[in-house]
Length: 286
Image (cartoon, rainbow, N blue to C red):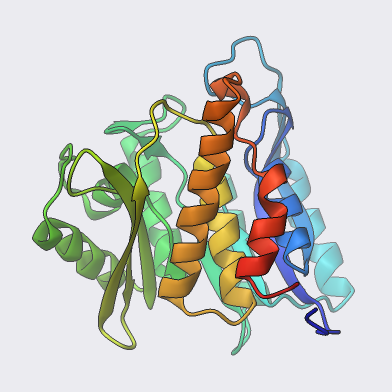
């Protein structure tokens, strides 16, 4: 068993859904299982997540975010990584930008998952102007993890449905890296109808890599959060960008596969919990 004694610490800035596996209810258990202390800064509290479920409650926690930040700063807390996901307003974009400035160090990692769109469409609560604000936040990140819809919004380009060509994907990766981050992970990549995965680009090495698995039928909520949380777990456990993306692709796909095989309600998220033993083996923690 791995005998690491010092815990890495992450600040996870996401919404919290009481029911339905996404955002903090995914990030907290995955990062904790990977041996990473995780501090939560909620951007909103919902009774359920919003994918395919109606009638949910929504509590905006914007007013609490700066007091959280001020209190953490007063305690001289430091983070090995800052990980932001769903942000509900322009004000939250500004708050998180300030959080990056306050808690950035020479050695920590800032990961932005620019949650705002999928399947060629901006989420209904957002405007095109919000995408411009998210672009500014991504400029401050060390690594960004957009899907292809989000990538085109960040770049001000027209969304194109797949299958894609390598030339197209690698052009997106380079343009996204030009925004500022040293590392880019693009999800929802596929070159044919049989496989789906992610592409990575590391500006410091100029290296592009891919990780694919067989496609599984259906649309599953919360998988982007499973992927990004696992990717960060890999990076903080010393794996390279491409290795971490491979671990994240496999873990996410196996979580989907368990949900598909169980014929569970896809709206409620995927069964990532039963995959912890395999994840810990991949991370060499057991």
